[in-house]
Amino acid sequence: MTASGPISSPSIGFLTVRDFPELGLIGGYLVLNTTGRPLEFHCTAPVRPNRTQEILYGPTLVPYLYGEQIAQTLLGKAKAKPLFICTDVEPALAVRNFVATPVTLVSENKAASDKLHCFQLGTREAAVFANRQQDQEAIATLWREHAEELDLLEPFNRLHEAIDEAQRGAARSAAA
Image 1 (cartoon, rainbow, N blue to C red):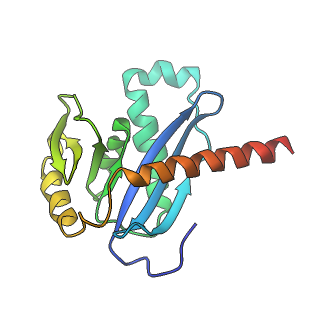
Image 2 (image 1 turned 30 degrees about the vertical axis):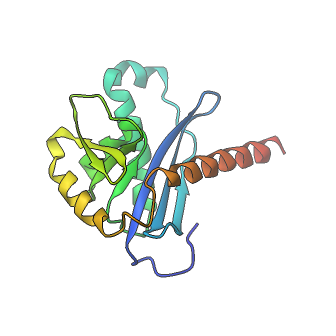
């Protein structure tokens, strides 16, 4: 989906991955302008690792699936170049190793990991990789002028519902 209007307006990306036990992982990426209007939406087909991947990737499997295979694919499809990207699932932060755009984990609760650097972003808890602390300042600076316009958690509700609807639509098509 690409909404009408200029793609070059300031925007923020929202990235998530949902785990559907019967299907696998489905990623979604929603780009909003800074007032909350959708500019783009993309979602992936379900991704399910096979047993060999589970064995070979070991503890690196989840960041690989979320960050490289799913998130990198979604960001590659997008036309809009957001100011920064928010995610609500920690393993998706792994995409930061493959993109120049700052990526932050946004949540209601403080993240608890020695791999993360936590900070306050408006009224929300946020985190970046500890080795990417410079992203905090970049994100805070970019967000400062838009903080009154958009709650950084609300778009994830829309994104989750859109993924759920796309998944239901795919299930209906497969049953027909």
